[in-house]
Image 1 (cartoon, rainbow, N blue to C red):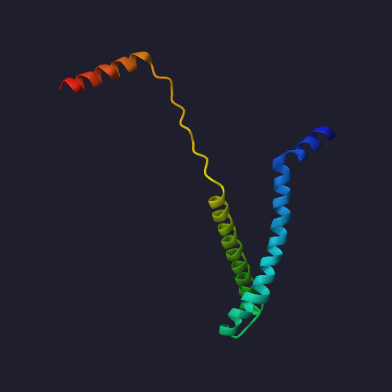
Image 2 (cartoon, rainbow, N blue to C red):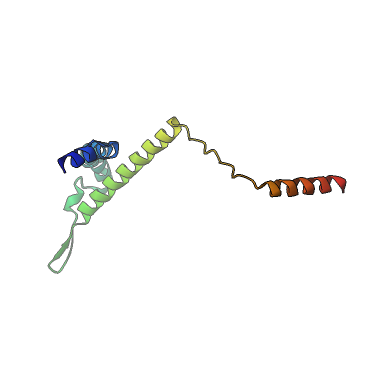
Length: 124
């Protein structure tokens, strides 16, 4: 059982996934810092508040943290945009593999019929 687990972990797909998760976590920290320390203060210049997490909406005893949600939306949009740019760049660098269409074997009777058809077209 340990041997099977070791083979499973050693496969490329699992290792690639692990690297992706680690880099994704580090990238999320960078984007959070970008949003919290650069973008929010820039937007705060126009709105008058730097920290959006203070924006709350209260209805009775319920408190809706609109500012925290806004921070999360900004984080998501930045991450999605950067991933879009990365994929666009990778697609430009990596040439597309042209799919070679495999020809299906043609029935000899169909070949003969097509030749007859072509000859009849030439006669008319």
